[in-house]
Image (cartoon, rainbow, N blue to C red; front, side, top):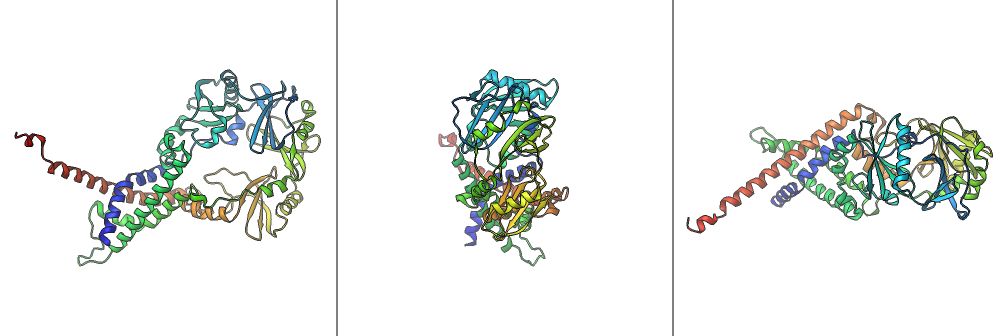
Length: 490
């Protein structure tokens, strides 16, 4: 039996050693460089100041649909409104009173020039051509925007911006540095090359089965390592020397940690539907109070040209809260002012409004605790993900939690049993962010470098031993194979 385990560990190590080593090394890169995306701050920074002097003309044949929210902003010098309905998004030109169903290369060039102007004086955008899918837009979330218009800014950073051909929005932004380091980081770590990731099923299965094989390899190796660790006549506890010894002790010390990383990495794709959180759609509907119709938006913006918006507003974002209509006036530096009432006057949320919302969200559940949260807790915190603070936290009797944005009152984050499990079994194990004290830097960096260095040593030594065995086997086969010249009698 033990011989069979040795063989299993040996040949699984030959098959998986290099990949696990690359996962370790790429994880070190990902500690400092994340996969590129357009943050809310970057998107707002590229918008021009909102000018509603030519607003608002509405398409005459546009149906009165039910909306989740709307966004009013400038696009290529004209005010436009983006309507988010359930499952569909619409873009309307409020100067011309037209429905916008796409953007040509020339129109996209005007939008890119405007974004470049906002991001820096004298910046220019060069058109690189249409892109249906590349390494940085391979995920399914970009599908509604394909094909994409790609532009490069002459900002010295190699910044590239991808514009949706349907909405004209900047949906992706990368720099030369991000692209370089992500080829060594996320692309390797997530098995994210376009040829794999463009097929979502193939990609998820690749993650599931390589992680599973890695788990088996590590578990068998850990058992063998413990079994081989005993006091011997020589006084040594290991039967191995050289690279074998390094591999034995690295496996003993960091084997359990390797198991937890492989297991939590497997959970990152939520295999077989595990840990999928519920939608909280009912709570969101109660929070809003009633649906938002296009007619409500048209009524609220009937005097938009004379609306007194806060200075430097680049976006007006509106939705329902408690049955009433509110809007957030955003500036380029991502500061938001809440507006409400018939004239959209400044109207910050009050504690009474948030307490009423907390009771309204889940009327059949008891509230254990509620109040403001100025910094992260165990579930809502800043580390790998950007979070807005302060938030209003509500904890219910069944330990579900709902976090409301402190400015808008909208759902910022939700926690149910499945998301709680995913938090500890995936995020805590994989990222090492299980407590506030270890999330602080440089404490987290030191902890992760020590842990990942040990796991990496185990993986690299195993890879080296496996490669050496393969080389020896190949040389042995060549030595035993008769030469075609000797068979011919030479």
